[in-house]
Amino acid sequence: MTAIRRGPLAAYAFVALPLAAGALPLYINVASVYADGLGAQLTGVGVALLLARAADAFLDPYLGAWIDRLRRPRLVIVGGISLLALGLLLVFHPPWTGTASIAWLPLALLPAYLGHSSAAIAHLALGAEFGDTSTERVQIAVWREGFALAGILLATVAPQWIAADTATALARGSVAFAALAPLGVAAVLLYVRPTSRPGPAPNALPWLETVRAFSRAPFLPLLAAFTLNGVANALAATLVLFFVADVLGAEQNGSLFLLAYFAAGAIGLPAWPAMAARLGTQNAWRLSMLLGAAAFVGAALLGPGDLLPFLGVCIATGLVLGGDLALPAALLTDTLRQRGEAARAAGYFGVWTFATKMSAATAAGVGLPLIEALGYLPGQPETAFALQAVYCLLPCALKIVAACIVPFSVRIGTQGVLP
Image (cartoon, rainbow, N blue to C red; front, side, top):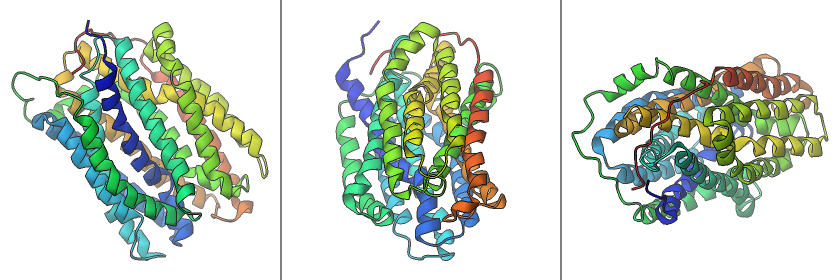
């Protein structure tokens, strides 16, 4: 067995930092910036997000197939980060306000989502070639998600340093990201030597083969659990700022709660490799989802001024976040290794990220119109009962269902080394 060397591993994992930092405002801030800051209709913003995220999601299997054929994951990562930077500039520098901004939003989101998707798929595929054992692959995933959490924390805190107004801060931050992220990623990837992948390139249309593979066990229950849990997480992420503003009456503290949540995630992340080694990776992931639901359901009882109780909810759910972040991808990698499919990892992760994007699209495209249909209006706390019910209870129910369908065993192979 080849030991994992910290230098290349840290360089590989670092790429997750700008990927996460660039993605956070796209999933957390866009709805509130366009609805509250630009005066766009909430349902229109939700539909625009649904269209852009769905279009992006359907490209992911094709991107995975293309990355497998190209066999240049480092080049794809740098190019994807650059495209993400362009998209952020477009999203947070809209030429119009009000209803007209809804037409601009999906056009601006497409390059941002396309850049993030291509870089993320290539990054996951590169990581699938690391490690000899399941335990090492969990460790690799934890390193990657640790850097991702660092990026999320940076993206959460940095706007407060840049400007008091969120929209202005994100506009300026997008310029800084465009200037720094592509060069930084290119520099660190020089320390990750490309893995030798002898033999012919994958067969034509591997995306179709991988889609078919996900219709069979153990891929199907694994993907179904991942998707349901992803909808739960994306729904909470989409609605959290509305909840803080109109249920708790603490709009100015939104960044503080996000910071507490992700900081707790970083603190709790190192416990999950030990948990996976003790219980099995699939049982550890199941436990993280059930604990997350148990901790989050308490938010349904909160009201105006309940800042400390909600802070406790954020910390409790953050502590179990590491299981959601690191363990599903490690389980998929184990399954690919067992079946000798590591050379097609990008194709499989293309389908995997398709599920991630469709989860986010569903959360925005269904969640926002749902709360509006139930009577919620942003900025009017007296209408927030529907928001609270959807935000607090629906994600918990989805997590419980997802935990019940996680496969109870995934046979594990032992091939592969760190590049």
